[in-house]
Image (cartoon, rainbow, N blue to C red):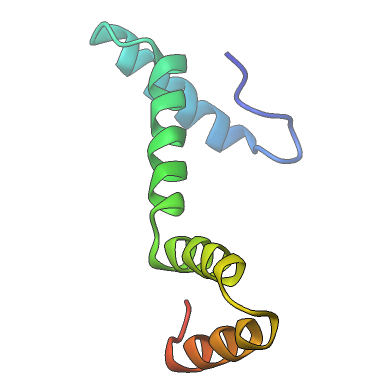
Amino acid sequence: MSLGTYPAVGLREAREERDEAHALLAKGINPKVARKRKRQAVRLADENSFKAVYLRWLAQRKLELKEGRNSTLANSTHTCLTLP
């Protein structure tokens, strides 16, 4: 299991990740699988954020509206909603 390359991951951080991996192994958990699940949870949270849902809705709604109404809808909803 790779912990990253040297300039990107410092020695202290690599040692901490190594210790975490050893702790997971002691509990009978595969650290590579645990890391993958953690990344999936973060990605899923990002996909279901208000901003992501709004942008998907807006893209779908634009397909259903006439061309002139598309920009009006985008401008009015974007002005009303402050996206983080």
